[in-house]
Amino acid sequence: VNAPDVIPIVILGGPGDGVVVAEAVLDMAAGGQPVRLAGFLNDALPVGARVHHAEVLGTLEDWPRLDPATRFIAALHKVKRMEERAQRIASLAIPDERYISVFHPSAVIARDVEVGAGSFFAAHVVVQPGSYVGRHVSVRAGANLGHDSRVEDFCYIGPNATLCGRTVMGAGAHLGPNSVVADGQRVGRYSVVGVCSAVTKTVPDRAVCLGVPARVFATLAPVPERKA
Ligand SMILES: CC(C)(COP(=O)(O)OP(=O)(O)OC[C@H]1O[C@@H](n2cnc3c(N)ncnc32)[C@H](O)[C@@H]1OP(=O)(O)O)[C@@H](O)C(=O)NCCC(=O)NCCS
Image (cartoon, rainbow, N blue to C red; front, side, top):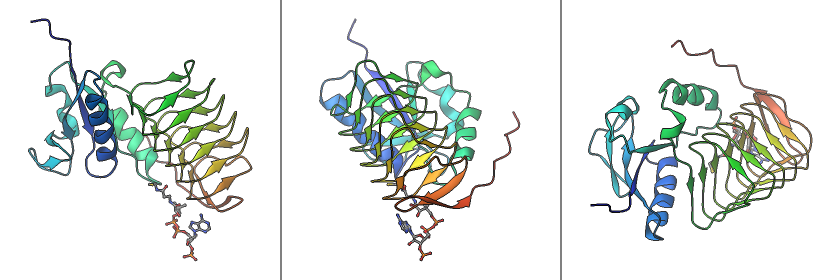
């Protein structure tokens, strides 16, 4: 019978980040969107383990075994380890069209915003016009992305963080909860901005910084490319 298709969504991850995404999927379904939380893929938990109203279906490598209608979203953010995690996600070779971006029903995304595959927008996020959000980005509850901001692949924007207008988050960069990037500033690739910090000057790649104003106090080592 031609029942409207309900998209099964499987989350790569589990307790922690994965549960936050799961809750948004449940809210979408409760609001009448044609999606359902189908389960998790997780390398640490056994098949059948219960995680937030769903079960672990296998390890990350098991994705090709699932129903071809399944769409995926990665919830594998890890502070200071994002370069490694980005490589791990890429190594799975899941085609972009099999990923789905999840928008909590209360997120407000301006109509001209471009969003890549597999990104997540939590409750009460606001994304202003002219912005770009890449693939596998996690924007957490209450964050505000100012007009013409650019958030590249694998970034994390923490709860209640603010990107002022025309800011750039390089690939894999992390903005801690309640932190702010001032107008036009750039946070470099894989850099980490700590909690409650104010970025008033450009942050180089792989820097760890915090404070008001944010000061760089450590640099992360580049992660060698994974062999295919
Ligand atoms: C930036 C960060 C990654 C650094 O981690 P770290 O290298 O383990 O260093 P610490 O957290 O121990 O912080 C170093 C020092 O700075 C202090 N510090 C931490 N955040 C600070 C802030 N916003 N302003 C001023 N000082 C701060 C710590 O108290 C510590 O002080 P101490 O050396 O006197 O003990 C971490 O502080 C952080 O903010 N992580 C982000 C958390 C996050 O975004 N979580 C996402 C889930 S919501």
